[in-house]
Image 1 (cartoon, rainbow, N blue to C red):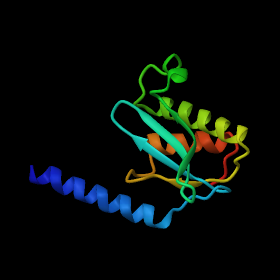
Image 2: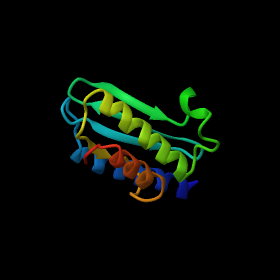
Image 3: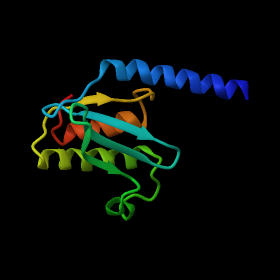
Amino acid sequence: MKARKLKLVRQQRRRRRVRGKVFGTAERPRLSVFRSLRHISAQLIDDHAGRTLCSASTNSPSLTSEVKCGGNCSAARVVGRLLGERARMQGLRQVIFDRNRYKYHGRVKALADAARETGLEF
């Protein structure tokens, strides 16, 4: 029990540290990543207005046919590509990457690389 609580405290501390340096605007929104064991999701957030501009997730009905398992790197690449396309349709080119409390490797890196391939700059 004590080890789990310590892990949560460390995660929250890491999340606050990352979020303290990252702020999204309408011209350059924040690309926020959330991952669980089964799914991964990302959204572009305008912190100034407090609203989500676009999002993509392995939970969404448009991706359930493409992705068998949502908790792997190939699913993260699909989500990153879809988010990049949706952002380009709204005229967004530059974003600020918010990895939350996750290390920049594996699924988070795969999502970021796929978003960069579609033309997002960060």
